[in-house]
Length: 336
Image (cartoon, rainbow, N blue to C red; front, top):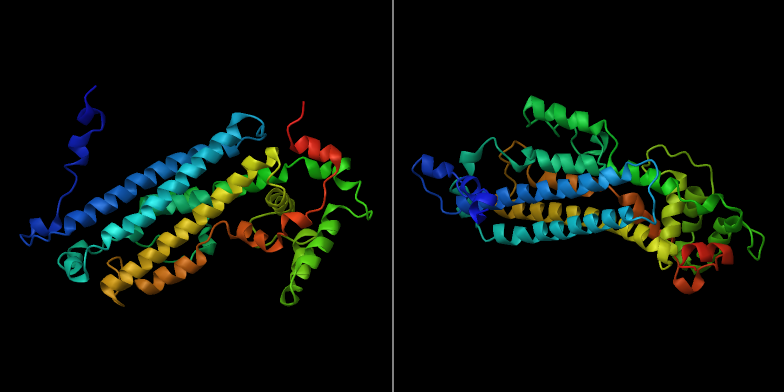
């Protein structure tokens, strides 16, 4: 095996063809523009490879949380997080190109646009961003080839990672066991006990949160318009509250990595939006979008795991956490 043959460098390093050179109008920064975007697509491929493997693990009807599977899923989501951090910082390199440098070759790109990145749309869809929740959904695939557009809509019909995580959370075992619900000093179950503790922890301007807690965790709330079911919400909040118990550490890391993915995708969108504003001002994008305006609205709307982020509103400090029944504590920890 030879290094360049293994990496197929003959293909990769010959894949940078400058449009400006074809027209005998050499634009030096077009090489940077191509390499940066090719690197993005390579990293998107790796992210999809990692997320795809996590999707496969979470698709199983019964995941053994004591097996290596959940740890593998957590590790691969963590790798995805680190790649996304790299992609955010990659904008710094692209921003060494000035607006005038970009104008040297920008018009040669029309109607091509980063909006046509299939892999990025696949990633958003696989994670759980629904077509109906997108900003400008009528425009969402309008710049794609018909076969690519159809592929995205076909993918949107399949179960995304967010739904698989919801199903996994619904299977959390403790809430159906007697020792979880009984044994509280005031005779109430866990969630009513926790509601009192939570209410006592709130400041004067936060008392309305008790009502929100009741709606999300104590009522027969319909889940219309929500991605997490009532069972999944309770499981996720319980994991967040008692994450220091050994058996809940991996579930907490999984949820936290999903939140990090959402945060980094949002950070990348905002960096991209600000870079576009600096480069072209209020001009229309090469793909025909409204440029900064479209990117801004998409950045505000395209959060995928925001329902996990909302749960942090209902946390209390560790010193206030209700003491769990002994039988449940033993199940959550290491025992002989």
